[in-house]
Each structure stands twice: as structure tokens, then as C-alpha cells.
Length: 118
Image 1 (cartoon, rainbow, N blue to C red):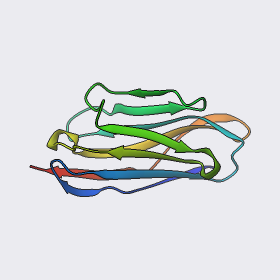
Image 2: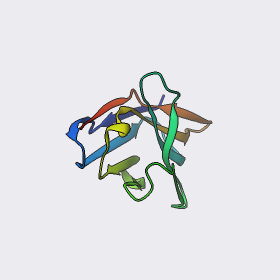
Image 3: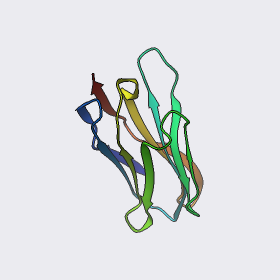
Image 4: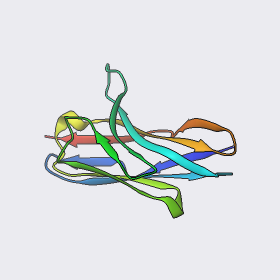
């Protein structure tokens, strides 16, 4: 069984920064895909950023130039550096990974709250 544990959420003023982390534990052969999603109240969950094993990244238009996703394969960890935060970034942020262990499936973290005050 694989578990994802997130950390780094909190309350920040507009213009501030936060760094989210998500670490996978358990029997892990490889992790092909790592991503961050978010869900604001009354809205659908949406992709924020993703990174694949080769290092290619993908970002939502709303966060391009402000957020950076990165990964540490040795630590089975994905990060989301969030700069120039705005109130519209307020949401619960979830990490997800596609893990081979040895079967391949996706896993989700429990979510971490990010609140940006104006």
C-alpha cells in the first residue's frame, strides 16, 4: 500500500509565498507522474501543475509564471513552490502520483488547505 502525505499549507497574505510538499511511502518501484490539483469551495477539482518522470512540466494558465513544480526522485517527493499568491488561489490542494508498486495505479494525498487573504 502506498500513502501520500502532504505538508506546507496555511494562511498567507496576497503577494506571499508558500511551498507545498508531498511524499510517497510504501512499496514503490517507480513514480511516473506527479501532480497537484486544487479544489475551491463550490468548484470542481482542477489541475494546477504536473511533472512526469522525464522532467517535463505542465501548468494551468492561471498559475504560469507564479508556481513551480519540482520533484526529488530519491525522496519520492513532489514540491509546489507558490509565489505571488492571490486570493483566487485559495483552495484545498491535493497531490497525486501514478505509482508502480508493482502494479500501476494512482494515489491521492489527503489535501492541504491554502488560504490567501487580501
